[in-house]
Length: 151
Ligand code: ZN
Image (cartoon, rainbow, N blue to C red; front, side, top):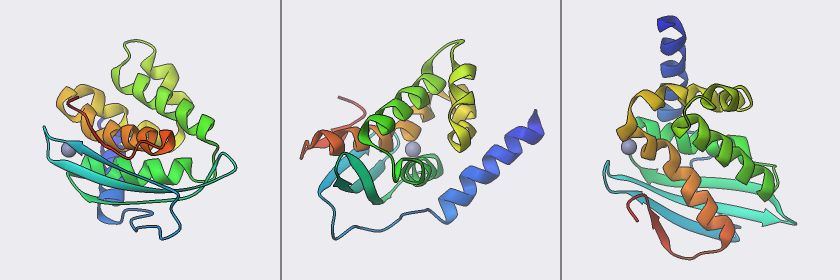
């Protein structure tokens, strides 16, 4: 089990050091900002929507390793998906982190995102992992506001 945990940590650290899609998108049709004041994480998301599909996505911001890796892996997993698919992915991701019992079933469907299952053991970090997803939801809803994990 500790080997598995080390592997998960390596994946998260890899995304933290070399985040995917870490760039602004000049062609973005939606943007949103997210903040997690408890940890100091900040993320700005850029989404290019085309016919209900996330054609391209990028992010910028600063924060802890978990939030940065979560944003990196979130962008990689929703790119090319429809907005409905992205919403469903967030639901499963959220259940994996907060649900009791149902968590393991949810993790099985999440592919690489399952590396965040270990975050469940650190409740203070759950908001770091879900911040990019809450921000994505705001961007897809077309809300021009800043979302905060504390509201
Ligand atoms: Zn954080």
